[in-house]
Length: 106
Image (tube, rainbow, N blue to C red):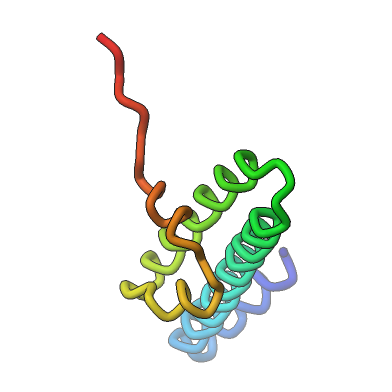
């Protein structure tokens, strides 16, 4: 990481805006990688759910994965999820459980 930092310092001395652009490019790359990993987790959980084995486990896993994926998408500016719901084949039973928290007992 020191090599990247040293390079960015040198770039900033010559052209300060170039250092910022390089950093922004790195951040965008990390966001894309993270979003791709979240999508793969959704795909894997839905495949497990569709396999029929240990359905309760995979339903819970799919709900958690989809929720995390949607949050990730929203953090980078994607507010509509209808296309990915269709493209990834996210079943209604997964969507219906998003955001549901058990009631607190008093």
